[in-house]
Length: 183
Image (spheres, rainbow, N blue to C red):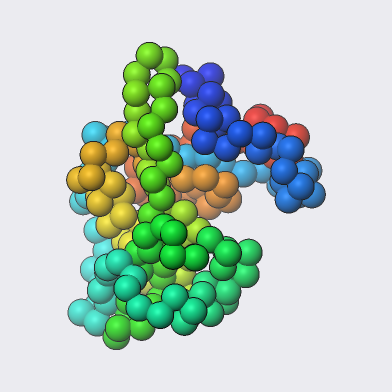
């Protein structure tokens, strides 16, 4: 895909994005990234971190209100998205949530004559006391592998300011934007 394809995909995924009040209220100097990874290029072993034995990963299947309290510690605006409509994947330390993300099915789109199935992790967060241990990025790695196994063509990261973090897994910046539109 080329830049025009990425812009078309962005507009399909997020119609009228730059007309949304919260986007228009962002400071002009802030620039964000959209990122994409063709899953046929994803290498599960590109990022391997030796984690302690007390760290595990899996889909969340417990009390949603309890998880929302943890999400709120990272970003209170995300709590609304942890509503039980999307799958939630977590990293755990001694059975307690340390890291979390939504597993999004973004749909099937026709780009340049090809149908592509898009998914991706969303609202990715790690509680402060568990950061810088590799738990969050390993969790995203697992979600990316799950999407690949489920037949998605691309994994898509929306609205991030930590592109270099995702690049460690092979994600690439597709477009940059600020409140005024695509750069």
